[in-house]
Amino acid sequence: MRDNLAAGETRAVSPDEPSPELGSGEQPSGLERGLGLKEAVALNMIEIVGIGPFVVTSLVIKAMGGPQALVAWIAGAVLATLDAFVWSELGAAMPRAGGTYVFLREAYGPGRWGRLMSFLFVWQTFVQAPLSIASASIGFASYAAYLHPLSTFEAKAVSGGLVLFLVVLLYRRITTIGKISVLLWTGVVGTLLWLIWGGASHFNAKMAFDFPPGAFSLSSVWFAGLGAAMVKTVYSYWGYYNICHLGGEIRDPEKNIPRGIFLSILGITVLYLAMQISILGVVPWREAQNSKFIVSTFVERLYGAHAAQAATWMVLWVALASVFSVLLGYSRVPYSAALDGNFFPVFGRLHPTKHFPHVSLLALGGLAFLFSVTLKLETAIAGILAMRLLVQFIGQAVGVILLRRRWGSERLPFKMWLYPVPAVLTVFGWAWLFWQTGSARKWGLAEIALGALAFLIWARTMRQWPFLKEEEAKEPEGA
Image (cartoon, rainbow, N blue to C red; front, side, top):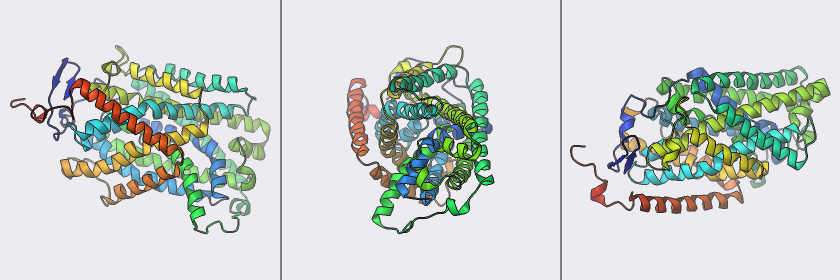
């Protein structure tokens, strides 16, 4: 069954037919397609960078035990690139608000298993999306302590206050949001380029590549270290898909979504590797692995204390930009599910004059505020990966193969290279990384189990699959 909110009535859908709106060139949701390629790349890149590379750099060096930490950054980029083929193929074919929600629904069948998979993603969104926002805001507060020591209460006030400020900033039309995103992106790229230039002009190659004995002995211990490091680097790369959640607001999405994804990953990979090498060429890795403020320490070593304070302010700008982009993208997910009749209808409401899903934005912002004042950063990072990898990332990689079998490749505006190799490698890569999340795995599995139970209760209440009789699930003649 699919609820038509505008008409206030329910229409039966065959379990295997594509959702009707996907065959239409029109935008059924009322959202405005106001974002071009420039804004798409900007929104992706500011979400990717965030606070991640500034707070996990030292953790990655410690996990790998030396400059070979660069391997973890390269491996993260390779995995992101493989996964980009999955997101690009799905995003170009289904440019609608909600991204993964729509992808899972269609790939697994909108009348049957797709209902469960898409519901699980929305269920997860109300935990992992606020966790992602909270992790960036907590990192923001942690870095702010370099400028002025903060008590526990003050740190929580800063992280929570950032979330509230960004909810206010996002409470406006998408065309205005696009302009703000470009401004934030300018600051993000400018910060990274300044750090890279500083390191390049004071670079010590002997220090940067001071590998300890056994740095590349490929033992089980080495791969365990790589796994622990990649949990951090992949977290720092995530965000290259953000524009898929805004698919209903992207102009010429069949071209701009794939281009935006790959341009974002390419640009960020170059910037990340250059920044990591620059830091290692200025701060000895044995010192860097224990630094809480690695970028500030790096700039202080180059230019002194005043410059380090300026660099800290720029890092805070980057963190603010990341939370802005994350909250923007995820606010479209409950909205899309509500339009589809697979979530509470209140989340399908648009602001009467600004035309954005304000209820969804306020709900996720409220949960993010709660998490930002109660959790620790490393707990948030591990929890994010454990919850998202199975349903969202592995689910999509398997889903794109199922979708090709159901739809055929002729319906796909973008087709991944060497199909199905990128999708298969992505499944193995994400499965291995899920195992590396350690004790957080049980929380991810528990969340899926609770989500499945919630789905069954919801489906039973709404008389939807799997509690719908076979003859009721079929499309009525003449419909």
